[in-house]
Amino acid sequence: MTIDMIASIATFIAAQILKQPNRVIRSDESLISSGLIDSFSLMDLALFVEDTFGVRIEDTELTADTFDTLDQLAALVQSRQK
Image (cartoon, rainbow, N blue to C red; front, side, top):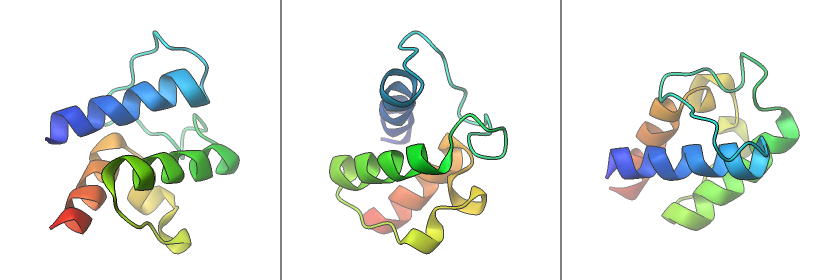
């Protein structure tokens, strides 16, 4: 499930946020701290994750501590699905 989850999120980021559908995003690539995703895009990503995986993400969690890599994001989602 984690690999599928990461792939789904990476595809969304590349196609919908970066507008580069062929862009490959590594699971350990920095999203926020590198500037790849800005605060507006972060909200779009959070809504996608909530809708797609049926979890609730608090506004206070939209930080580089929990959302900076696909690995971190997948771990957060998995912790909410249990």
